[in-house]
Length: 198
Image (cartoon, rainbow, N blue to C red; front, top):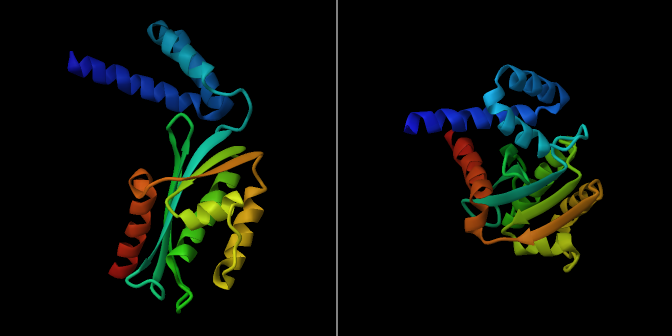
């Protein structure tokens, strides 16, 4: 019985994935349903949730994080971002380290690097409406316009992030505690570990 339930769930996951693959994927799904009438209801439900426009991910949530280790300021900068569709489906993720060195390296610089990389990816993915979540109060407050940027080391990053935010039809920023930002935090940490292993 458990094996049958697993097979059904795998089939439903396949249907959801195919429905999100653009018009060619949806056409293939309709053909699949004609040959397999027992799954027609699942196909209809999956197709109903997919927007008819070409853009596959109109609404998404971006989580970002950054770290400066082993010391702040002056450490190695790493960042990570995690982008998911509003449905919960993962769109993409990335992590990296920045090669700049010196006393201007701070956690806030790393946080901005993660945000900028995530915003660029969301725009490349043609996301129209984005909700951004991060655990940096400074970055979130600045991106909301509640706080200005008075730091010269952050000025260029702050301005780049503001330029990118103008590329969305709608964008919002929300501060979340670190435990709700665990995936982006883990990506930033992973980038540091990889850099240390080289």
